[in-house]
Length: 233
Image 1: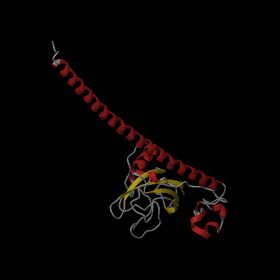
Image 2 (image 1 turned 90 degrees about the vertical axis):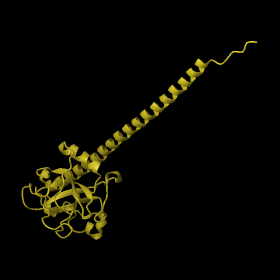
Image 3 (image 1 turned 45 degrees about the vertical axis):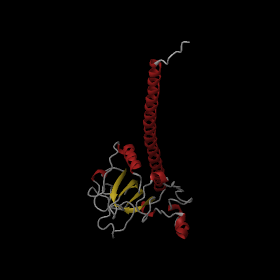
Image 4 (image 1 turned 90 degrees about the horizontal axis):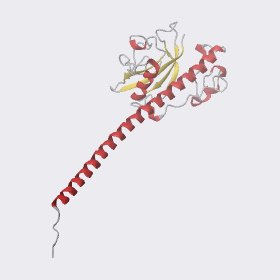
């Protein structure tokens, strides 16, 4: 009786097929990982754009409301930025001058979304700040201007804001230890000296009504702040 012997060529061919299949699977896996990474990066950029747009729109909305108050008779120096968190002060005085009161500007400033924040210091915390804290050098007079600031933002959001506002994602750095320049009127430590915003503090800010800047806190950590000149005088 004749017994067929195994065909060595067929066996070898099967081995080659298995090798090709394994290689194909490996290549597919690598490509899928690269695709996933690309999609993740794209989503990250898209998210930064959405967050930057949210901050910009909030600032524009507040600016329009304040301009309306001034147009209808409120003096810039009389603008009151009390909020319900200020207790009795919120309902005291001239309600028509209060930006965040229903009888005044009736402004509701949305909170900064957590994803847009990179908080390195809780004193003061990351949030919106608004007031007549300082004079902006390139506005008409030496009187204090109304400035809105989003303090301690994420760097990617800061870059996206500048790309939207000035066409360049570069983030200007405030000179010296001026990290709280845009959110306080204090001339004591940790921010001694001139509290006005001048070309000395930020040469790239001159003439720019809204921008995101960086600064270094007392512990050497970088903080990012978006500012908007709400009312100049």
